[in-house]
Image (cartoon, rainbow, N blue to C red; front, top):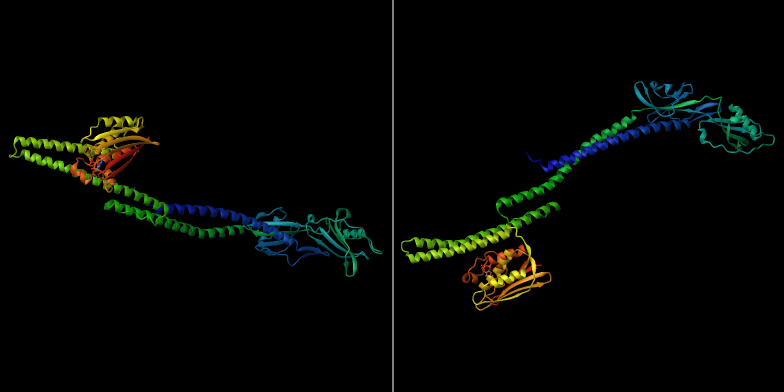
Length: 531
Ligand code: ADP
């Protein structure tokens, strides 16, 4: 199956997500806006009726609609009807002139001629009366009836006053009430004032009461209910224009971001491919311009290449050294065999040739065994089991069994009861290798000092000889496989694997190896174990 590109997945996913988020939020916005547009229209209807009702009064017996009365305002038509539903005035188109919608308490939706409208109506009571009566003659100077809602007016107490040769406050109230056509008992006096009116003193009387002589009026506001739909439509339209733009922007953004990250990964893949196919493990990936996460990845790759390179180089050197070491005895065996098989060789010489072949075979066998041990130790082929054991006893035992050559004296100084986690056969190999080196590179009638002692939580094993020593230049190299100092090559037998194996065994025991030496003076190898 073809793998889908990361760029494509990211771009598609983000685009889809933005489209869904935009779609859902636009729908929610449209629903909310249409609801609030609907509410707003209803509020406007009520407000228009309210403000128009303030523009109406009944003055001096005449019903007046003031100039500021708005028959049409902001899409809302306002009409006046009698209480019986007879049309008085208005600018509403004829089709809407119908009184059936009068008298509803709230805004209602009605259908006129196949179209829906919101309708709100209010019956106006002319129940606030205002009379001005001449104090001296008792004549009514002026009167008005207002539509101000009664519950907004607070009755105030008044003082009984009378003027010389004039009427009293209560007489003035009676005149006003009888003119308004209502009884004193049913009226609620709002206030009595005695201002100066055209140089004459007047009673100004305000009261509220049920009127029997004035006909009440309906004020009705109408507006198409699809106004809200229009708002809804315009929001929907803007959303419809904007949505593709947002989605496009999201798609382009997602593509650019993913391309940027992917391009760095692609570069890394390319370089990694070049390194793996070009067999050049010394090349490294470029990490400087990459984003943090990717440069971390590249650095990890570089570390891996570094380790691979070291390991490959070690392997190469190991193979070439091993084959070099094996070639010499093989060449000798071949030559000896050829000679033994030739006509010129007598029995004595054939015997010598056979002995030489045996010697070279032993040498090769020893080399192959040593190689096998080193390789196993290096690759952890055998998971070596470590057990608590006495290093003191083991060292003592090996030293006792060791027979030095060249009249060398072995001096032991072994602290008792030092226990560590150890593998007996490996540690035996380690100590034997160190003793064998001290003996091989020691001087005639020389000394080998073997010490084992505790130092804090460490156990230190030291093998020291007073032999040929190692130059400071060569000292770090002695742990490498197949390394042999030139002097040793010519004089002493060996493969250069002994100390490499010591190092591996020490590593398996989490121990540290230290070498100290002075040419012509001494060599001391220290193995520091954890107790
Ligand atoms: P081998 O002894 O088989 O050559 P080793 O790995 O044991 O290999 O030692 C590596 C080299 O280190 C030796 O060839 C020798 O040059 C040097 N070396 C090791 N031990 C001593 C020692 N005690 N004194 C002097 N040189 C030593």
